[in-house]
Image 1 (cartoon, rainbow, N blue to C red):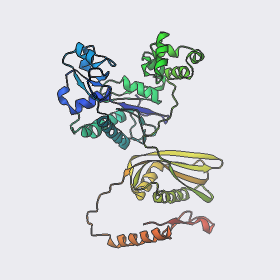
Image 2: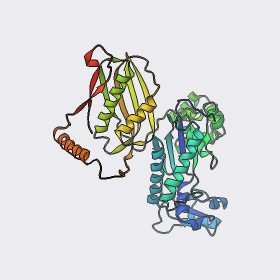
Image 3: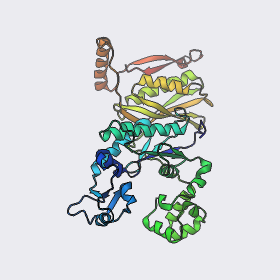
Image 4: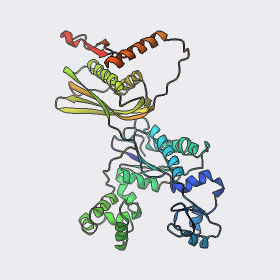
Length: 421
């Protein structure tokens, strides 16, 4: 894998194989090494007639298969242990797993128990090597998510977590499925068809009827489907046939949907006249940061990701910025934006600029001051201004910012910026 990546789309998939089985082993260490099965639903009477929904590797080695009745599994293995499912326990573990991933990456999609898609696009500057980023996500999921949630802070070896990455969700999911333990599987664009060709059709997200039809036609591998004509598949199987052909060739344009979607918080500013100097452009950005920070939709949340857009003539210039850690202070956000925008050259004069917060984090937790007695005067001033703002909706205070002191037009030399201490 090259040290640097392009700015194209990259999706990661983090998954825990057979999540319910690993969840039961986490809270029942005595089952490790023993054959056991998990039924499809809780037993209200006798469990013998219930089908097997999950089975441990030891049970699978004894010939037990999914869908088999528990009484049949007992006939194959006399010492098999039958467990009723605990959906609430599995969901708590899964939520902890997702929470930790959301703290590490800007957007995470829930892909079912023990699985998640992670948007890795835009994180090249933080982690030039994609493998290092995936290893970090896996380590965080085990040590700070699954382990503590299962009551075992020392989680190494407790959960088997796999990771894969590719240009889209389908390729990333298949890569994670076939990734060896402890080593992420990364599929580059030129490797997609060769990688998918030997994979079974079970990976296709199609109905059971379509799966059976493909098997009846002798199509067992994705490479066999990719070699067919898409019109023939669509004529025989309908839209799912076309979808199966596209996925078999590694084509998937489905969007990654975050677990907690929200409407982006956006603020725009029109300049009285187009500006081409950095000082004037930066003054506008600072004004937008102040406005965004006062929006009630943000609440006490921190900022994780934002998009800066500028209108230049009739075109739009955009830059997406992913922050390395949640930012809960406007001054710190300004400083981080200044660093990320250093050296950026605008392609022309800017007539309008928009700042859009596209992802929020958890509440801000700040460190208490070393000398809590200081700053009492400023605290009283802030309380007074808060009372004024609560009554009138604004503090009515502004500060003068130097914009273009060299300009011959007086109105362009300085600008009034909202002041909200």
